[in-house]
Length: 399
Image 1 (tube, one colour):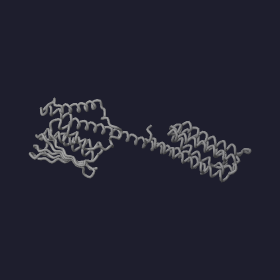
Image 2 (cartoon, one colour):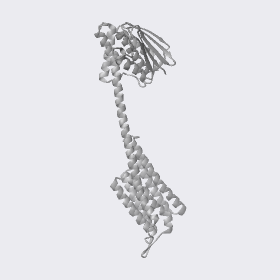
Image 3 (cartoon, rainbow, N blue to C red):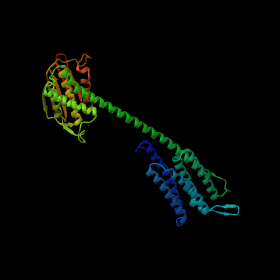
Image 4 (cartoon, rainbow, N blue to C red):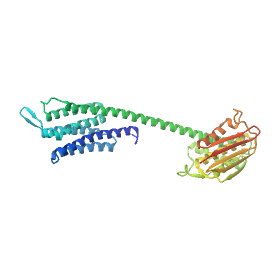
């Protein structure tokens, strides 16, 4: 069973509840012995023995995480049955054909009748249904026999006896009902957590697939498309350098290996200018001329730098593939601890709101590789374009 699961919390609650119930009976016993027999040995010995056995039962249960049925049965037989009967035999006296009640003993040992309730509560929780019923019947018989021995058969069973018998039964039944309800709630909570974890794992796998799709679209697919269109010389050193880098990425993807990063790299801050310069260099490998300007760029968390660089890379890919121009302009400035980046071209432009038409906005480019990336990092992106007017892509992330 998982540590901290709903079922385990339900079990600990039931151990605490029945333990407190037993503690209330022990408190009554301590008060009775202290008030009526402060200097006698036997009452204190009886109280000390029951206190020790109760401490062992619940201490063992808390150490194991749940009751050991062997010790619960020992509690029923010793605390609930043997001790009350032995005390009655030791203190009661029989004369002729009648019973002589031990009046002083009733005041000192009367609290032993209370123990039947807390013993039956533990049995009702820890034992299976049939053994639990057997334990309750055994406790009922013991309570009735001990009561008649102390009070005497000539005294008709009154409200006190009925109350003790009712306590044994009702304690077991209520503890059993509470345990059934808490166990069901704990199990349902664990199942809900399991479903949530499964759903979260599926979302993580889906996010990983989307991230791989974006990376393939922005790198390998862009390179292959450019080479296939004959826009660059496939044997040019820069093109071959880019191809080698993307081949290494594909190899890691197939082997499902993560990029080697030191521990804590996710939360570490990096210079965003370095990440942007890598995106610019990658675009220039395929023949696009990029004029870049940087001003007071701050260090940002690594995921943010990665998302900004990937969005810039896709914006430059769109310029190269769709703008019918060989030049782009990139400006990146620090703004209040954040970053504002603008990618501009003087190409043919397009209508951002027009459906289809082969524009950058109609495919993966703007929608997933730029807009979605920035939104996931808490940033935003805007595209301003019109046919014949070029295109401006603005990326903004604030700390």
